[in-house]
Length: 418
Image 1 (spheres, rainbow, N blue to C red):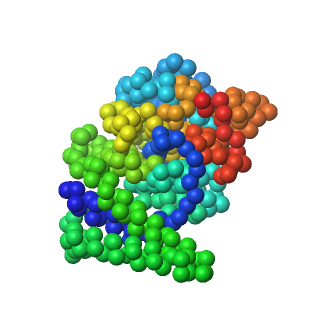
Image 2 (spheres, rainbow, N blue to C red):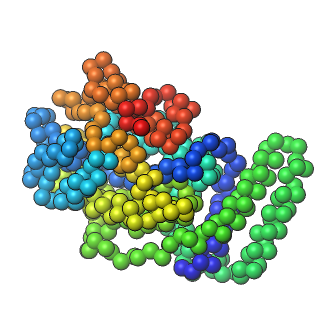
Image 3 (cartoon, rainbow, N blue to C red):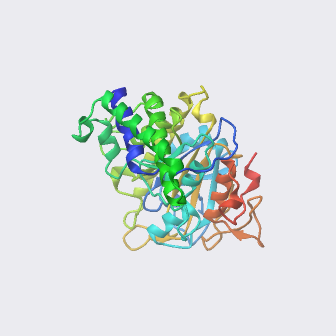
């Protein structure tokens, strides 16, 4: 895709979506932290990597698994998952694992909503809040994966489940060929001038807000037309992992490139697992090993890309990016009659970068449910609380320089923050 086509189509996407609504910004440094969410769709088994519960009689561990200690992290190792070991050897000191995360549901959709928002009450997800709090008015890019927004639709850019935006970026659709570059500039300037002239004429607050929204969309289009060519959307569509091992890395390339150009603050990409089988392993639990190996192979490559690439100020992305890896539920501790594991409401989550890493917060108790913690420290405490998605979300918001109390009543785990 050439530079002209990117600016034409990507800018038009922002304008046409109607998502750019005026929003307040907060005072932050120019180097605000970015976030990439990697979502494992279907529900992973924490006991495959994050929870070495070998001594628990209520748990069936995979064969060819053994305990693995890397620093203070207690993990599960296997010859089938060398990329997991490699990842923690290189990035374990920057990683926080949350174990015993209680989502209180075994429904896929409710689990996604709870882990992404902390509630089922229809609130915006963590990515939308983080983008809304951007001092540079950057957005949350939905390449793939779950998204929940109510108050901040202006913070969201959607690529489309079938890659509609990517198809537009190829410039092979008829609509994108109906106007040339000069005509596009004339139309955009005319619309901007007309909107500027109408805003002050409206006395109705809703009408004025609508006009301001339109104005912001046009201004954002102009910004993207100026900055958009810095984004590399010339994605290598070859399967870099071999037959039946496609990865979320091709989707992540979209997110990394947009982040590199300074147009987004956060993004989410979904991982469907080995061969696109999803993580919902009711049958044959060994598939979890295939999924985790591919996931961590992609995460290793993601970290390399973040190390090698810089933002518009020349800062390496790895220095200012937090990677959040999560799934909507866990798997039952015991195997079912067909060798898989059914749904379980307690799970694990992983955050890489920005927090005080090399540690695990929370635990699975003897019944493989959430061990109680003291929320501010994250330490196990018999008189404490269950670890919830709200605790983790509040911690991410604080890391993003957003007041968690404006979003949730849960306390951040302050001991993880500098």
